[in-house]
Structure formats: structure tokens, C-alpha cells
Image (tube, helix red, strand yellow):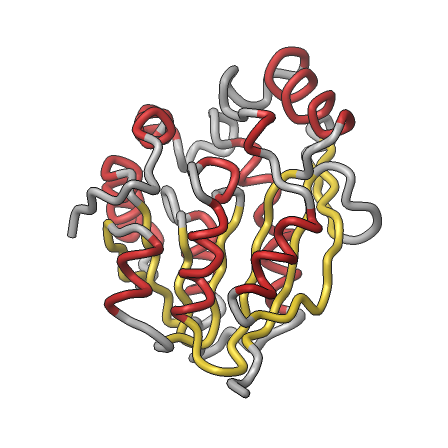
Length: 238
């Protein structure tokens, strides 16, 4: 189901469609996603039971995290607006033998069609690529059942994140293509926590994600100066 939501940046959509063919190449333009995935998956799996759980992966791209959660027994629906990336994700299922339901949709449309319908929502490295990230957060909350879990990761907005993610990642180490990130779209943890509260969510943990592109390793914990991940729970209605 194709969407024409106002909360889509056509340039960002084109950007991710343009790298679709190399999405599953661990040494290609999506290399950081492959390197980050084990740490992100472990963080999620340590906090929720994925086996038999209903999960919606918002901004799933080519399906790296979606497939990893499905491999642990989750019933995963991956949604994205980038059609070519979704085509690659669907094709890769023939290679992996896993089952993921991929759909072309915005978060807003999915939440409207399927409110309070899932136990877990993940939204990784996607909020900094949309015009209205607060709307995505509210929509993720809207998909969740009471007591459901939301996992969000994004980039902090400060001098350190500019130096590491843009200058270092795009121009020096060149682990991601130039123009991947826009600094003014980076999000402070305080802003993200406020959007969560406004959406009926309670942030239970905010912690850093630390990526070493030379060693190709990632871990969670510690400071949140650059990449960070949030775990939030949908609070009961008053």
C-alpha cells in the first residue's frame, strides 16, 4: 500500500532506494547497519521476549533488524516508504528462509489502520530522516497495546555527534555515503523523551550506542553523546 504522507522527505526516500541493491552487502554502503545490528538486537532481546511476540519494525529498510528478530521467533511486520529497499528485503527472504511481512506504509498510516495492535515496536536510525519525528513517535505509540514496548535509536545533536557522524563517518572514514545525515535533524534525548511522554509512553532507559568502524564492533551502554537507544513502555490509560 503506497503512501503519500506529508511526513516523507522525497530526497531521503530516494537516498535509501538508491542504495537498495547493496543493502545486504556487509562491506557495502549499509556496512554500519550490519555492524550495529548485533548490539541493537541484543539490547532488545535482553528486555523483551521476542519468541512469538508481535513486532512492527518501523523504517525497516532492507530488513536487517527485521530478519534478525524473526530468526529469534518474533512475528515481524516491517514497514517502510522506500519501495526498492522493500523489494530487496522481500527478495532476501528467499535466501534466508525467514518469514517477515513487509509493507509499504508510513508509521502514521499504519497506526491509523492498526491501533493498539502490537506488543513491540522498533524504530532504528529512522527518526533523523523524516520532517516530523514527533509524529512518528506518536504513531509508534499508537500501534502499541497497553504495556507494549518501544525501542528507538537515533543521533544526539551536539558538537560530538557532528564531528563523529558527519565529519568522521561521511568525510574521513567514509563508512557511510556523504549526505547520509543532516545535522539539524539530529535529536536530543530530552526532546525524544518529551515526545514519548506526550504520546503516553514512559522512557525506562536511555543509553548510548558506541560504534568502532575500524574494528567493526558496536556496544550499548554509557554516554549518549552520539548514537543512543531508548526503551519505553506504553503506560496504562488513566
